[in-house]
Length: 450
Image 1: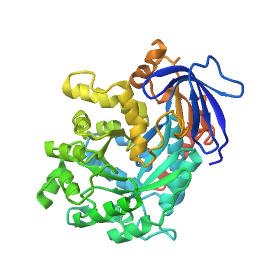
Image 2: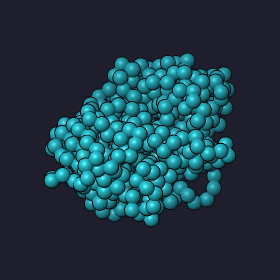
Image 3: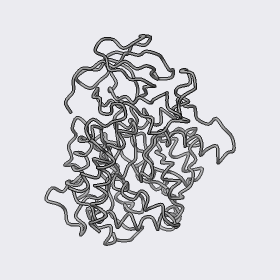
């Protein structure tokens, strides 16, 4: 990532709680913000003009990049999460390092166009379809890291341990490419990954169904030893809870707690179907929770207890998961709107709280704690949303954040800066040209590879 010092002038900027006019943001060749100066009437000579509301870059804390190829097809007919999963397995079988790089590059470019500057890739398609490791055992993961670089965004590759089909069940033929066979082999392979300027690495437990209880401590220890983030799918479906109770006599959350998985370095993804004790365990341990409202709606998963989790002590972040939609602004407002549907009351989250979930909390969950604010010393990752579109026009500037969070969409993103580098300019990606065509091509290759 080639960086130079740059000066930006934001027409309006959200500075950790308030919308300020005329903000000059200086960046260094390290990719950090060096100064922030509000109250400047116009762009200084040499400054890049960012018209609209500039907010911290958004963090997509939960992604499965290849799921993007299911958009449209997955919306046909009925069924449940479990029937949807069959189509996902079929798609996963067609991936190669080459076609996954092409698809992920286009998907990450789509994310950049939506204002996302960092993605957490929950990665479990490790090997060839028959389970044989590639010559480079991390070829698939490295393809994702390279794709993020091509698209100009940061990535945390959450290398996922996936060993079983269910409690006491061996991986099925469809799942062989996900599995390293043993947790020790997973740890050895994942340990060979090395960070770069734009990429960091963490661990993931696919679920308590897919990782035997005796292996949970090993994965947690791997992450703790490296001070790396640890993510886990948790209680997305009632069936997971029921199966865990039959196998272990306790909920998935309690099982994770008993094996040392919970804590401030851990993020539970979904956490939709929880008991009162589960919520207390997550909150008291400062475990983060990543909710993915558009996917949870699309797959009919349910609405998680987000306000109770926040009250209990769990910071909330957001992900687009299956990419039914890639729009972190939509994910943010869904925290509030879904809670309104459940409670039939309004005002659970302010616009500022929702933005922190989409930016600062998401970056912290992905191991980038120095990102998510527009302040000196923080990473120079910025997203500018237009305030003159049919969705955002009208409110006074002091309500620009409310207009953005509750009315804007990904289509209103005009500029994106990552590490001081201007990668989206006036709604056009500067590195991945004609992103829709790139998506069409990459998805067609997978479809024709059937």
